[in-house]
Image (cartoon, rainbow, N blue to C red):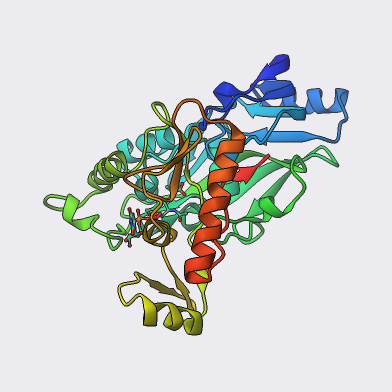
Length: 326
Ligand code: EPU
């Protein structure tokens, strides 16, 4: 276990913003985590992964908890990975062992624990599609609980965990039901056209990595937190109103609601590639805000608010951040 007082969080957020935590605790197993928490009962706990979906708006006055639990095992097609395993490394490992199901989620930054809280999704697949159960530490009673997929109440970039006070549940491990004969999901965008010959989980993974490399900034090179906003859902009536003015508006029907890509609306508002202070709208995918190297959290907040305002004015739609503000 590593404990750092007054810790610099620069390495713990992919936006590469400077912020401090009163304390940072990196634990290697659940016993260490429990020991630490029993010895330090405190209110403000913030479990984070690699900070790939966070915006620190200032210093954090509590304790940031980082899992360094990295075991992976499987019992036939039930694969379990501990919270600190890098999601993309798990995906590669499962595919190389002949198991499909996670390939569409390739190259998404972050670790398993955060992925299960966030219900990461890409190219027509969400984490919840393969999650079987999540083991978590329920901090108020300091006991390990098992949540089924249903208990996790997954929705679009949403879960039960996101509605609890942070630090109430700390994800320890996630079990995925994978398959050696999984059905491939190739219906999103031009994924299919990127694959030559008979598709396999490995080919899907390679195609997804290629598409993401072209469209999205590498968090190792440019500070960002992936999509900054969620794609909004509007009613059919509101959609028809928008379409009467903008006949080319892209849309996806889902359970009676219409999803409009926020990227399209942001582009229509003229934001693509624009910069405010050190923060900018990424030129290849305007749903992503980036740190041009010298951004402060204030720059990013100002840019995001300006974008929200113009989308609201032009389309009457309120877009909400996907990134969690701390
Ligand atoms: N579009 C534009 N201009 C652009 C880019 C996109 O108008 O410059 C429009 C197009 O109509 C396009 C549509 O937006 O068809 C969708 O674009 P894309 O396929 O890139 O996906 P997205 O809806 O913008 C979502 C996820 C991504 C995920 C991709 C692929 C959210 C918030 N984002 O983006 O997830 O990789 O789909 O499945 O749902 C993330 O969550 O951090 C993330 C990157």
